[in-house]
Amino acid sequence: MIRKLALAALLAAPAAASAQSLPTAPYLPLDLASKAAQTALEACAAEGYNVSVAVVARDGSLKVHLKADNSGPHTVGSSQGKAFTSASMGRDTAGLADFIGGNPQNDGLRDMDPRLVIQAGGLPIKVEGALVGGIGVGGAPRGDIDANCARAGLDAIGAE
Image 1 (spheres, helix red, strand yellow):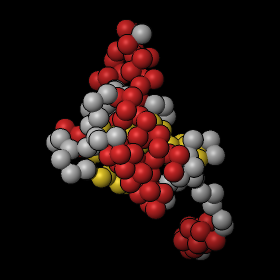
Image 2 (cartoon, one colour):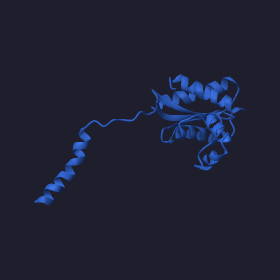
Image 3 (cartoon, one colour):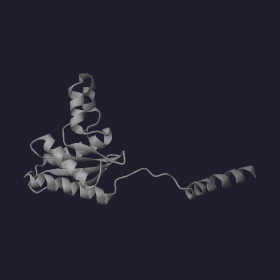
Image 4 (tube, helix red, strand yellow):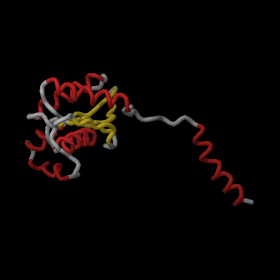
């Protein structure tokens, strides 16, 4: 009898838990990720640069990738790596590069994960202070130009 009651309680537990409202973490909706990527791509195109733009979710998974006509093959990995790095580290990739360059003891961060790209052009995406993803741009002749295009994408969706 005790075994039957214990089994019944065990089987009923998931149903009871699912009836309650569970808190949800902030996330980046696909429509906003797409808008940010398109705006960043257009910002660089307006300056004459053929780039790739990647937007990743907080967990680093790719949500959107746009590759401009005539952009180089290296821009795909660069943009995705910058977006992943920003989402993973929660900071801009230019600042991270400066942090590592100015502190040789942190050089190991470069090799921490093969997906990391420690070059300017990646920005974290924050909404109301919560980190929800990252955007990366690759292909302009300088990282600060990549970062400016990424910033245009964030501004278009009202992200920090």
